[in-house]
Image 1: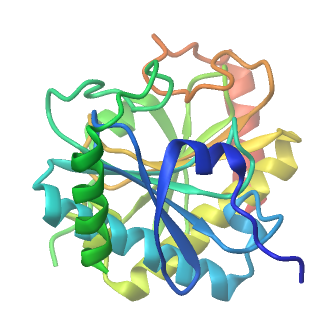
Image 2: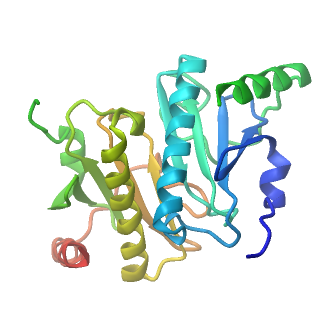
Length: 134
Length: 134
């Protein structure tokens, strides 16, 4: 099997926080929303249905649990979970904490202009909290 | 267990095409994108992680297979799968067929103004195709 390599466009917008059994967990550097991206370490997977059924169950539990834990951590109102991939084909699932009145509410967060990076210490602190969630 | 009732706001924007073992499948009446919504018939579920693990596996297979079949039917370039629920809390997953150059490409389809309804016969024909997929 070819080796997994994270797409460079995903690597450019997030911090690689930790590896779960199947997924790499990235923290997006955009302080407008607490935002994780989970990337299953399976080369060439583009759609959820490209994974085999066993991987899909593991991956489903990973993004669902990431959502549950991010909701507890942030006290947000809603979790948005999405596999889009229109810009970056490598299979990845967004897990975004949403608050009523946030910078895009009630619309989705994608395509809302430039990311607003965290202050360096704030990013480091949030990544540490995310690592501690798992 | 209380009886499942489809949220009126979902019922207002789509046609109830069929029931899978767990989900009701709706066809959105918006001809800009071939677009299904799957609603697990579990009262009070809002987040994916509100389902129990067994239901989550079934639901994951249902929305994933719906995506695979919609891709085959439409010959689209990409399937977008998303659990958002910022406007309608009842747990539902969007399964949308996307084409390069479509009315929102490469952005998501949500929040793009008013739906463009199908001609009545075209909607009926598409619903029949969707029913035939399963």
